Amino acid sequence: MMGWRGRIGFLVPPGNPTMEPEMAQLAVRGVSLHYTRMVAHGTTGSLDGQDDRNRTQIAHLEENCELLSHVRPGVMVLGHTATSYTLGRVGEDELVARMEARFRTRFITAFGSVVEALRHLGVQRVAYATPYNAATTAQGKAHLESYGFEVVAHGNLPGVINIYDESPERAYQLGRMVDVPEAQALFISGVGMPTLDAIDVLERDLGKPVLSSASAMMWHALRCIGVRDGVAGAGSLLARGV
Image (tube, rainbow, N blue to C red; front, side, top):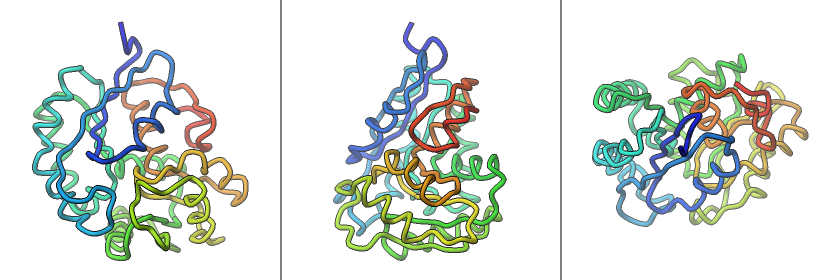
């Protein structure tokens, strides 16, 4: 049987070419990964219109979860960090509760996974890096602060035309640009820009934990289905197991 240790279901933005390959990079033996595309309109990956696309995804989320539920995942993952910034803390909590009640399975978000990971690491002071525009970056900073984290530095990657055209090398440059000594950890937001190949290098060069939305949501999803394997190559959070 596929997924004999557990099944993870991911809700993916329609134009995202990054999530499936990066999640496959973190695959654990016996855990199967399943995907469905969310609904959004406009130019996917563009910095313009992000909030409108987020709201469209939210509006159609229940029907997308209905499709994903047919593979009977042990957890469903909303694989889009900025949707949480549009929702705000109360809206995100309400969404999670509604999806779990409707589908009788765990439902987590990429951003909620970051919160769990930072708490697990005992981190209070965070450097926050994004590939977004200034407005969405400010939303994310406020969302982090609403959970009690101190954002000691933040910044967005210059020159982004489309997030899906970015690279691990640019993610590395972004992390180096935003990090400050006071930060206990660096968080790189978003699942559209490839980050996994940059995380180990950043941890060695910065001397602190580095996590991205991608690494955090796989770590959290594995915890949700009770799988405790370590995963090498994408930072100390995953490498040490759960």
